[in-house]
Length: 157
Image 1 (cartoon, rainbow, N blue to C red):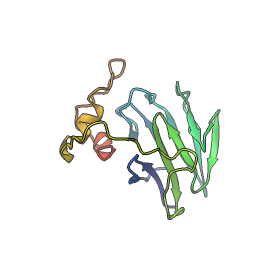
Image 2 (cartoon, helix red, strand yellow; image 1 turned 90 degrees about the horizontal axis):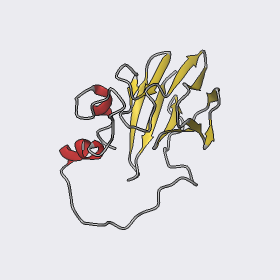
Image 3 (tube, helix red, strand yellow; image 1 turned 135 degrees about the vertical axis):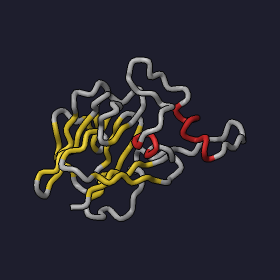
């Protein structure tokens, strides 16, 4: 079974994260399989568990909750291809065996185009540092400036 979480970006692009193990933990902690260094993501936020031909998502008592298709996950829920997973400010699409082929924002949650405040262009290399520069991570062990694979995966946010 080929399983991916596809991160939806505000500009319409997306980033695919392949899930290779039978259990994948998402959260802020350095030892999470998919590390999301944002203050409104719990240290161990949720996990996906592969069980035969199905995948279950379990919230790990996160402070702000985990959402599937806009509904808060109380304990755990079975995922199906195309489900939208909300973790903090991020929305992922659950993709299994290449389905859904077309990845798009949920119709109700699609971001509205906003008027640019200033036409300042930033170099692509600075995007990651700039996007996490104002985060308050004083209550965590996360250093948004350190280089690790989790942070590199979020480079295109």
